[in-house]
Length: 136
Image (tube, rainbow, N blue to C red):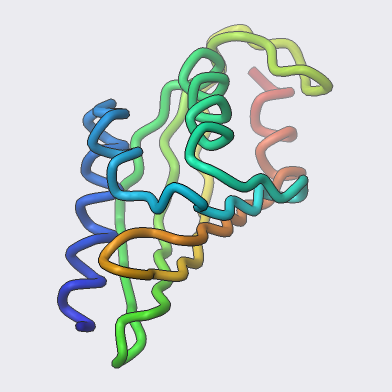
């Protein structure tokens, strides 16, 4: 189960990096729980689809230096990575976008059920991101 879970998370991030949103969303349970970094909790694949629509409009990101870990039973996983990004369109309540580039360490935690992602909790240092894009 551990290898299957690690493969699931690898495929999740490969789809993200490829911009393949249908494959990306297909790896989620219909009732997926998404804990947004320093924000609200959203539930459901459609809420996640809307979130990703906004993210893909405002940011261009690639995730690199990926390390993925999973529990022996495969029900939980974690990933640590670096976000290489470009801020394309101003996001509500954040500094103005002018194409600023950023490099940001980040992590995510997952619950896995029936071979799909049932929960994702993302974390990155928002103040570090704001400092980086405010310099650009």
